[in-house]
Length: 214
Image 1: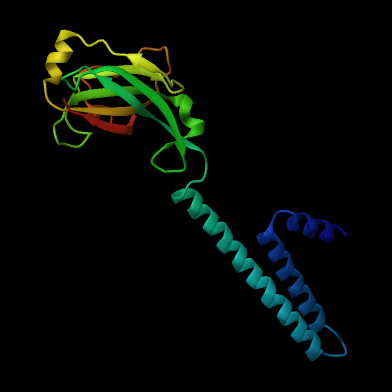
Image 2 (image 1 turned 30 degrees about the vertical axis):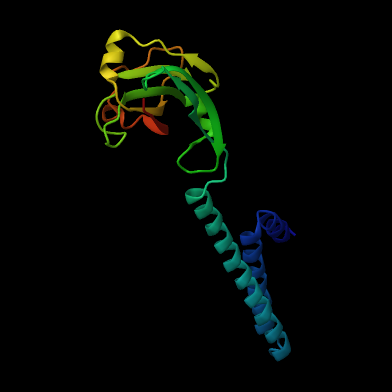
């Protein structure tokens, strides 16, 4: 009776456990058949063989299913993911300088986004620099707006100082939205202008990038 209870408990754990239970039962049936004083019955051996075959096939299918689920979750995540992007921005007439920006939240299943459960671990910065034709990770951004709470979905007025305006020049401008890990508002952030992404490589994630020209 105790053995039966153990088998029932194993079967409740899932397909792989159930298939192991079936293989164990097959073994017990085969053992019992071989110990018969009257001798082994060929029809019973055939039935046990078929039972073992289907149990083994069920086990392989269960393993493949579990492996497929792991690979899908690892490389094609289906959990909710999110990021903050520039929903809109307005520039001063005749320049590429921002006077308003709007941040919105964007959701999806893209692995490049962060998990929704991790949103409380990030704040958001908008980094701005003259267009330089290099990777977002290289160089410096003379203007850094933020930090903004990850839940921020609003429009902000931008008041640039004369020094910031001079640093951005009169040509095209790059806007980069970064998620910054490990800073909880309203605590003081470790990020400041001029912002160099390479010095924060372990803590930043690029959420969005846009360009503006006069």
